[in-house]
Image (cartoon, rainbow, N blue to C red):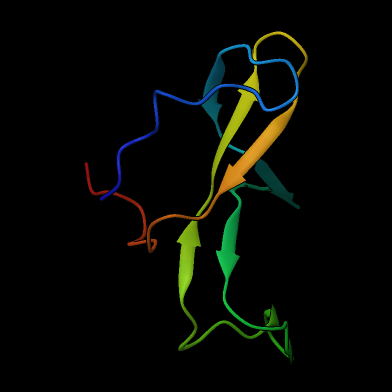
Length: 83
């Protein structure tokens, strides 16, 4: 699994970037945003078909000075970690 980058500088103002995530507020569910390879295909039950597609977690970095966001989908998503 890829570790968060610690060496990122803002391309707009050269300030430090901090890691976070984008929240997908889908009704009662609060989930991190995921990246899915290919174009969206409509599904009857889930609205979008994702079966068999590569899904990656999205790391998002925010500039502490100007607020610029930069996102990376670097590693394949393995689902929620077990506790």
